[in-house]
Amino acid sequence: MILDTVSARYGLIAGSKTVAMVGASANPLRPSYTVFSYLRTRSPFIVTPINPRFAEIDGVKAYRSLKAYAAEHGGPDIVNVFRKPADLVPVTREAIEVGARAIWYQYGVINEEAIKLADEAGLDVVVDRCLKVESARFNGGLSTTGMNSGLITSRRR
Amino acid sequence: MQDRQFGFSTRAIHAGTPPDPITGSRVAPIYQTAAYVFGSTEQAAELFQLRSYGHIYSRISNPTVAAFEERMASLEGGLGSIAFSSGLAAQLGVVLTLAQAGDHIVSSQNVYGGTVTQFSITLKRMGIETAFVPVDDYDAIRSAIRPNTKMLFAETIANPSGTLADVPRLAQIAHDAGIPLIVDNTFASPVLFQPIQRGADVVVHSATKFISGHGTVIGGVLVESGKFPWGNGKFPLLSQPSPGYHNKVFTETFGEYAFLMRARAEVLRDVGSQMSPMDAWLLLLGLETLPLRMKAHVANAAQIAQFLKQRPEVEWVNEPAMGSIFTFGIRGGRDSGRRFIDALELWSHLANVGDAKSLVIHPASTTHSQLSDEEMVKAGVAPESIRLSVGLEDVDDLIWDLDNALKAAVLPVERRHDNGASCHPEVSKDPELIEGQPLEGKV
Image 1 (tube, rainbow over the protein chains, first blue to last red):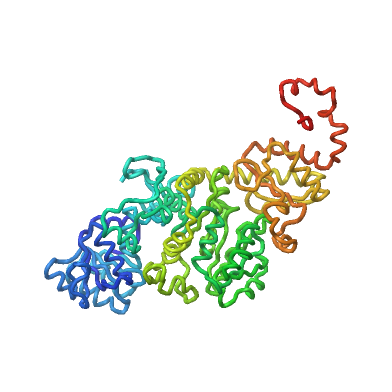
Image 2: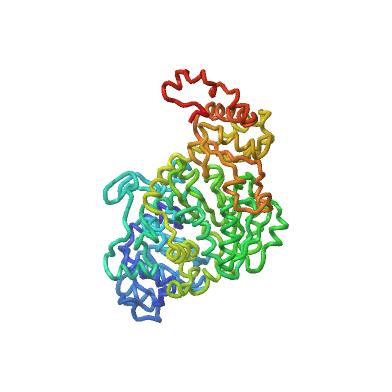
């Protein structure tokens, strides 16, 4: 199912533990590193880089592929994708194959065929959003820098 | 977690201020602190590298100020917001986020006098040139835009002329040229108009005015839409490696947040024009009643404009097409204007607008006095113009005061003193005077 509401994305983030980050980079200037580093240090997720170019990032073991990751850990709750749109169909097939519960395509990571594949295979799908930003929307991070979280509540959390 | 799109008044009261998670305080606490303890050296490094959210030092961010910023972003329908120490500081913040020496701005000429001097004097000294054009001369605007132009600037409702900006049309012209439209929405407030919904890319406010609503705070704020393509090649300050921040490329690392992140992490950090927590708290309080106040301001202003139009002493009334601030001219020019202002009892003669209190000023000798005669004409300021900012008092009382002052303005001063009952010796036995209320001319 394509998660296009705030409550659905909140449900996914609150109900997930493991994140496999396809295309995570060790280069501090890359957006994927920023997201990886944030999720590793400031979120309850266990985040793992999937990138054949690195053995580890910041002390976290990296895997060559989703299959290699799943062989040790089983399917991740979320496959978080930082790849160019042309690469998305094989990545999505692999995510389905290893039994991922959800696939999260980052900003601009859009491929209609891949989205359809994931949706039809029963995965939860998030498109053109950032896992760091959406996590920060719910944990109050966005609000610390004057960003519009869109959240209104009189309940204490 | 809800999916509801809450209405404007609900957001004016709630956006940015969930209950304080530590204490449960329902009102946003005033976090009066300069700095924040880090959880660990790793967390400190993550914050300084802009990879993590959190507060470091109140020159860059503060929880009370952030609550005000989020509420403003919500009300203007933007991605995020940054508060500044004043409206002019917010405006300068926008310029410095986009432009540097050698760059160029196109601005409406129908703008606040302080904006004219900021652009034409201070920015010029810093190497940034501004072309001023009539806000409704679209050919002139198009031809004023050069390859090094970084923004088009206009006021929703011009101060003090009341000229309205056609925001969708200006946005189209700006976007065709690959530059953003920056709109000062101070006189409208987001209650009357939301420029981002009509194509503007950045909104700025003097929060001192309707947002405060009570004349208590000097403050400013910018709100950005998150929709402008800052990576289009015209904005190297956002799309080239930044020596001010570890060679980060803001458009690459932060995507739609590029403008807001550079404006805060570099410009606000280096310029030091941040808002204080106490001021942010007063502005949060002001925003809660903004929708109610704007309605009442506009209703009072309409009645006062009608009253003035019927008066023989009044030469012309520039009726507000929107809002509650407008100008009119008294017969007899500048001298009558001076007598009119000096005779007012309830209206406050001061240099501000958007207060609950009704305010009056003579722009040509005050707010716009630094402008040349030619600039003044361009800005829509006639020598006899009197600017009213209609407040929330009982409209009958406001009209009573205007009525008295208009009568005083057209009478020669000598006649008032020779024949006025208040100055007659016999009146010194007047019970009012005995009770210690000196009459005009006695003190």
